[in-house]
Image 1 (spheres, helix red, strand yellow):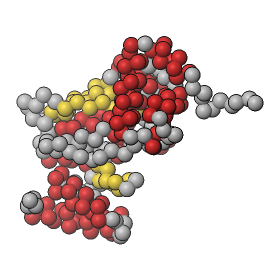
Image 2: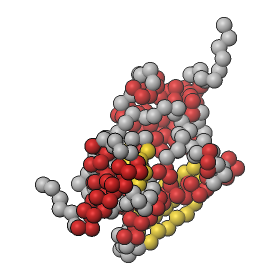
Image 3: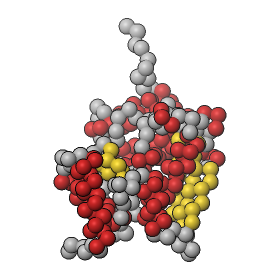
Image 4: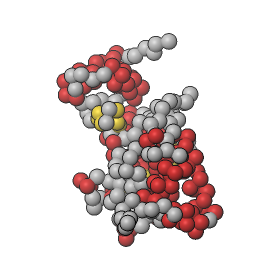
Length: 258
């Protein structure tokens, strides 16, 4: 059954499509145009106002877009505080916890954000604290309003893997929440590496061996999720044994002398 749009929604959809074809690309594939229609219809996001950006073949919601959405939905309040147990100021690593309250009676939607020199753009080096705070707010807002699309401020170079994790399906549950686990798997793995002070390159080598593939690109989403769970369990139960396992792999930067 096709959902009906109000006149204001129809007007915004037409405006976004015109703006996309004029200022983004004249040859946008039909799937991106349909996604743009859906985002406009469901969340009233505006390309002209900077609510959305097209990056790496997908639409991303900006921080300002999420804030504008919260304002339209009459968000009751937001609380942001540093997660000191996950931070390391000496190494410019910061973590924040944000809670969004959609209404006075809302129990709150929680999101965590972290940043350090290895997972932020060179353009914002020195501002890791602000990036971490913004990421926490964005993730809490996405949970609160059912946006399963990564906001642009959350994108950065991963400190763990020099290649992308397997792609996820952007499915949604009955409440409109994304049930894909791509960003969550990556974030959890990053957190495990920082929390237990593991070598990212050795973790990558172990992940490839665990999945039984030549590269992580070839591994399935389920294989990567199983690996992250295995790593988490081992790190808690016997970190020394985990370190022995990781040290059994040659470091990529090591030179082998014949």
